[in-house]
Length: 81
Image 1 (tube, rainbow, N blue to C red):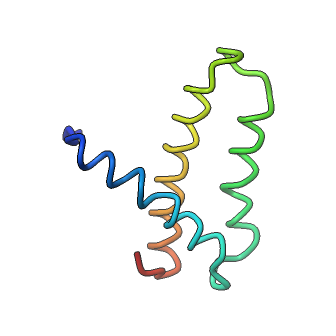
Image 2 (image 1 turned 90 degrees about the vertical axis):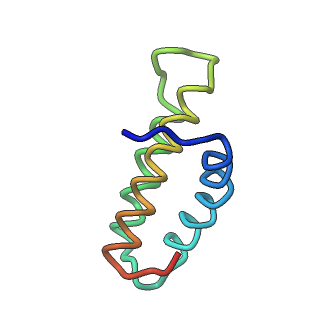
């Protein structure tokens, strides 16, 4: 896997929430596919995990899942980025 420079990580962090929000608001994406993102993230945040009181792992998992989800749904439903 190629390494990203810090500017690239910042750009990803700034654009990713907008991409996910666009997918979640899109009428082309069925509710079932929207729940594919929402349910795992909410469950991961509220259920006990390996490092209690340390939100770092929760944030990392959410960002990883958001990146995967946004890319997959944008490709699947032809949503422009």
